[in-house]
Amino acid sequence: MATLLFMSVLLILSFLSLLLILYTLIQSKIRPARKVLNPGPTSYPIIGCLISFYKNRRRLLDWYTDMLSVSASQTIIISRFGARRTIVTANPQNVEYILKTNFTNFPKGKPFTEILGDFLGNGIFNVDGDLWYAQRKLVIHHFNAKSLKDSYVENILKEEVEKKLLPVLESAAAECKILDLQDLLRRLAFDLVCKVSLGYDPCCLEYNSLDKTHPIVEAFDLASEMCARRNAAPLSATWKFKRFLDLGSEKRLREAIKIIHLFINEIIRGRIGLINQSREEKSDLLSKMVLDGEEDGIMRDTMISFIMAGRDTTSSAMTWLFYLLSCHPDVENEVVKEIKVFEDEDLLKYESLKELRWLKACICESMRLFPPVAWDSKHAVDNDFLPDGTRVQAGDRVTYFPYGMGRMKDLWGEDRFEFKPGRWISEMEDGRIKALKNVGPYKFPVFQAGPRACLGKEMAFVQMKYVVASILKRFVIRPVTANRPVFVPLLTAHMARGFKVLVQRR
Image (cartoon, rainbow, N blue to C red; front, side, top):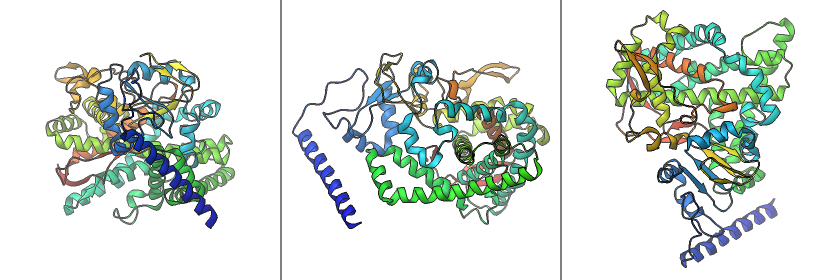
């Protein structure tokens, strides 16, 4: 072990020495490499834009957005030592080409699945080809309108909101207690997605005290953060080296994954035993997979993928929506006015939720500015050209960028940085919203698009509408500080240090 550590230290020192030599050469006024067609960061021989990337590593979203905003093609190329050539685009034509037109040339690819492989395994969000298609075909029925109407809205959603969420808010209002609304919404979303996918309620909204983190939620949080660190590492060899030695963040990731696997596997074993005894038909996804005879590993990985997607995306979108509404009380008043048309029992109906068009416009506008998934990458199989003329080399990482797209003047106008839900309205009638604009999924790709378009899109809107409407009908939510929150883009985005609020009865 001592020899191994000595070799590791020697390797790191050698690498640092190489970087020092290269930096000295740069400081000696080596000319930058010839500019590429797509504007990007200053790039040098061998190391590319490694120095600029390192300097901007804590503000990559805004750094990329700034460069894209001055690119005529809304595309930039990032080339740096130790990483694949990366094409970042905010061009809707490119996005459509990547996600639909030439879909087969842009799978997630091995580099992506390698980063998330320890965590998501062979789940639907981390595989390509036949394995992806088979899982998508298996779960697609779970998200149709009838399923949403018959089981999700009137049973699962109602119970979680009325019996758990609202009482917590009522208690906070009565005691003038500060709540972390982001944490509360994440607990709610975790309970909901576990009931839908696993047929199991982890009771995160009831766990001892809201001041304590539920162990399984903590494990998911940790695994997500550590995988995001892998993705953001300037050199991929860094995390692979740490994993080999079981050090630091990689050791924490391994321990978190162990907790998650034990949690999911125990539920799977229990469900298999129950179904073998009774052959009872249940509506959750796990029960269907058991009845279909799926392998335990595939069931586990699929459940982990769905929990990750269903928990973090909707809770992130709702957290930012409540923040934006608190900054725009006139918009919030219009939401409340729309909600109060419906009685409590009518508000729960699937048909009534579809009528909340102003609320949906607010949700879409919030996700335009603060998308739950800030960027998503594919990896080119073969050489190619994007519609804007950008040359793609086999193996390139090709990233479409919802965060930056929401800030492009050519797409959203001069007021692109402002929260204006009215931009989503297409038709009014007698002072009421008759229809919303049909904004294309390649201009607004927060739910992906093409063959891999999010199956849970409708369920997500139903959940967000009902939760937000239920809260705003009864309570006023206000931040305890006027400081602007920080958007953190891990695997899914969240608000740094939570969203501390005071709750008042309306």
